[in-house]
Length: 277
Image 1: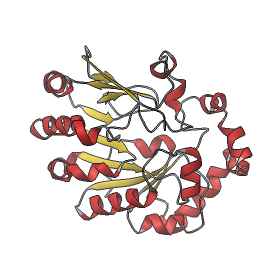
Image 2: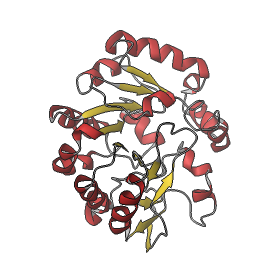
Image 3: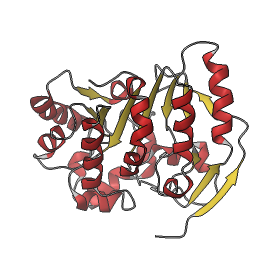
Image 4: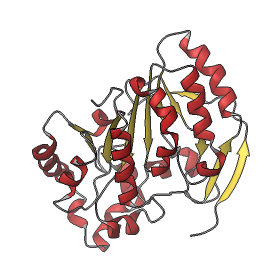
């Protein structure tokens, strides 16, 4: 893996108005700029935050060093105007490896534990989230933790998201959080090639699953993903039959046989702000 450039800056604002795909949210909250996981299919690669950078997506991280102090002020102001419904995070992973040292996301959770938002949706693919179980438990009636698990095949993860955490560690995180009484879901988003055992495997660690694909989940009808060349890459790897809008319908039916219809959420519905219990 190439060296990652880490820098720090002081943003003028931390809470940004939510729009588009994130219906039901008032704000997005991103502790970092950039994401070292640098997943090959990530829709953020086609957004200005990535396109205007000189370095490739996944090779830089910007730390918002005053984020906790800023959140305390902005959260108080926003709550005075009405319910605050937060999505963390929309363009980074709040638990990417640097978080293990900096604890920036943890300090943001400390702020929210003292002055809770109406609801917090925490999206990550990192088992590091287990570190903050003490704070997450304090927010449990206002919180849903969604952990990305796109496949059960390690060779698929290594081919498409080589720097992302191992799948077994993510499943363990889901199980640990669920056993602690938290609202959790597995985000199979986007759906990547998996085995027939995958739904049963996930049912052992969570009661809820969100399914999404490249055509609904990139926020642009699949056009962002197409420009990234993901379809071509999947075909090269012999998985081209997974890159088709009809494939999601088959996956939904398969997961519904294991989870039941109510607990299988699809695309935008799967990221909506409500407790999974």
